[in-house]
Image (cartoon, rainbow over all chains, first blue to last red):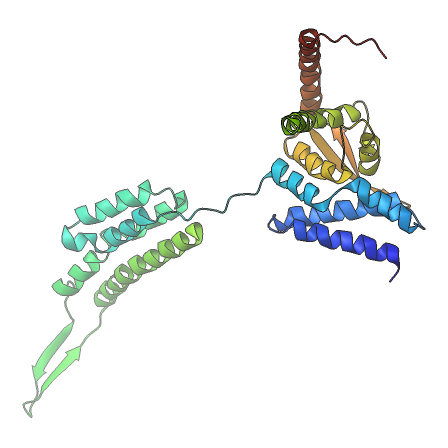
Length: 200
Length: 116
């Protein structure tokens, strides 16, 4: 390798080393600009003396890196934000109603809207789909609203047979029940995933 | 004592060099390399050409300067710099303040520019 190439390469390596820790895009831009400057200054057939002069004029890589840090600063790492408000919101939204019916859920809704992490869309979805949390589904299951639709008949041999007739009404109630279980859980998962993404 | 004096000059230089860069862009758009070469001289204001790149990036970020790229027949694309209205304003403000400051210091130190 020619002496001139080696001088330039060594300089560029020193520069990249000094720039470690800076944001990648700035590092790349600076390296490109300095390299472009060197090439423009050297011209087609530089001698070793030419290269040394140019590199000296450009300056010490450490000084350039220091200038970069002073002028442009290093962006402070994004601080991990506490998620207590959001975690409590999720707990109260789903299970708060089991402790104090409806009021528990309301506390969760208040926390949901108070959060500075979730977006407006997140909050609207959270409020719309989890009213009461899982309590309504629970109550529905316990109260067996809509009836089971099955009748038990004592057959001739003494065995109890049950024939179930699934009418439209029964199917409708089942669908409602499933929704009342699935939607809160799905919303909970959605809010939890969003929380993770936004506070990572 | 020498350290304090060096540090003061270093600080003055740092504060002033960005306005020297802005002044160099007065009235015309300049190709980056040309701009930097014309700023590098023996008057001690700019000691290292490489340090001008972070400075230019900072001026760009602050909106005092804007850049555009032009293709060049004789090599890679070139970046051109020019003053923004905000940059012009900043330069004019500094020029006025600097005159007052320089005159005040000269008066106090008792030196008068003989034009030597």
